[in-house]
Length: 321
Image (cartoon, rainbow, N blue to C red; front, side, top):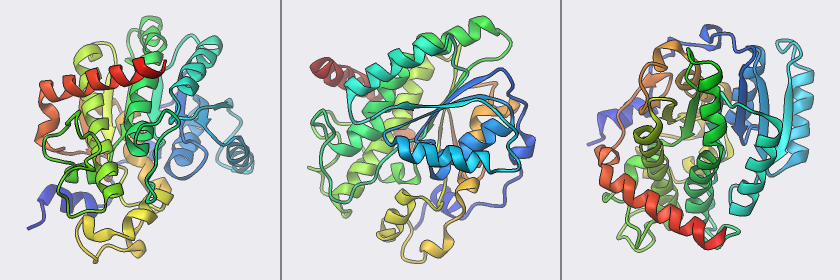
């Protein structure tokens, strides 16, 4: 039997919240990883429409320049400040260098969207030698957020009435992570007895880790920052197209590419979590399509699991930087 929560995330009701409901963001500084295409681009676009200054962080400057050209041709975007900064989430050194460059340019960060991610059927490792999904989807955003926290916290001091927000991109697939939530001896699940291909198991585990990361940060800094995690839904991105090729992992072969929604629809839940007044009262929320509070796997609320993962990540970082 399909978990009702999973079914609802696959086949959500029409959204009751849209970009038109976003507050004005003039004076706010935002950072979107992977903001040059797909959901990330739509987040970038919406933030500009509402007046934010936006940084796109990604590996590919050419694709970022293409995104900027699309923005310049967009009749709904009237000016706005935006800039590209190079970031490779698979390299801890690149993340450290990025954080230094960003902090040399800005003294505050109001909105951080940890949007970038990877689903790699061929498997492989990050530049630091860690399993690719763990490195890019989980460890990278953890380290990036940790390095940027002083700048994020500065936003609250500069504007005490508005807490800064950090939004992590998770996935429906976190429901299919190995049931321990996190095992440092087998973090990506390759050694697990799984019905899923190893790369899907690794991807699912990495998306469980993003929720654990979010909740760990929320425990530590939740009085000063609103942290959230998001399932963007079945949308037209490179990752979603890869998922639908192995759609039995989720709810069976009835889910196919014809059900994928436009990336702008996928951006809604991120934007809701990170900008709506009603989501700025309490942190630690997991939001699902389209712009609704959802229910993650219960194991994510186990503080000991969160702590074990964070300690493991800190040890991996110490080995490379």
